[in-house]
Length: 466
Ligand code: 5AD
Ligand code: SF4
View: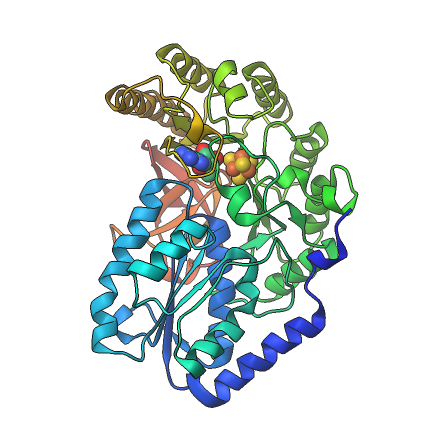
């Protein structure tokens, strides 16, 4: 059962709210702030929280660093290149601080939560005023107030996984929203840093999730993406089994919400009940992200994934039996330390059998403190690069041939914006989350349109409004 102290007490939240008001009356108006997000949807959602707090403090959000009085980098730790990007961008802020000494620069998120990173920022990036970890994000108002008041550097990466309800969030007014249903991860896949920087699994209370989504629906949100590192274990810490399927059914009953997506699902925990719920409920997109990571039983075991290719493929089969048109996506890691050529061939063979609509592929990156970082590499960098290219080739063919099956269909598209490449076109997403471009009036942005798919490419579909 969840420890009571997982949920931050209302008095503590009130205190932070008080500090928000204090900053508003003393410092923030009229000033500009920006939050730059590196990383996954969870980080996007966390950034919306920081933005929400900044806005309530009276800051106006900007996307120009030169204009900002407060810049917060919300960082990612999952691969080394994420670190490199953040450090590169932090370096670039130095001259801004020199020009405007009152500028406050903060770093938070998964990268900041690691001790060796916090130390490095402290010693080498002296223009950074504030470093705070994932577990104390909700205390951002008090940290900012401290820096504004005392003008001294502050680093806080303390604490353990908590849940803080009732602080502001910047829902940007779009038709789609992310809603976290749980935080943290218990799985300790041997390559992954997430459990170390985000703490143990903890679920939000069902009533808090449902009331947030009802609020969003009233605000015009039509599609929600429910987020968790492994949504299939939602509610286990509250003493409930298979609670995610029940939660989904309840979200389906909320008026105004027309589409529901979720990610990620760990294959070891996915249940038939969840697949049946997906199949039964019209509002749940027939689209499933099921991270495979590797198709080799040996590598899966070394990765500590707790399933083998047989079990994985049996889930795919069950999903297709219940939802013949289901769109599948996955995550693949190439070059895990123990991966041989033969193991990689096993991954390709699962790709061919499972037939994913698209994949997110990553070259393995060693993370400090993980089990895999102690394992010896059996392949060279050149071999791994070649595998990565082959993986993409195999997948591109599959993606293209699966995209062809949309041609001739009339599909519901949630329109997002004007196309970046062609002013005359609108861009949106179908049930499978695939990009659909078509000619249409801008007034459709934020609404659903029925579009006949006329042409498929590997990454995008084209159509005409009907
Ligand atoms: N190296 C490469 N990819 C990783 N991922 C997680 N950790 C690593 C790592 N150390 C990938 C996994 C996961 C996705 C979010 O990122 O595929 O599912
Ligand atoms: Fe990382 Fe595995 Fe947890 Fe996903 S399930 S966040 S890959 S430890």
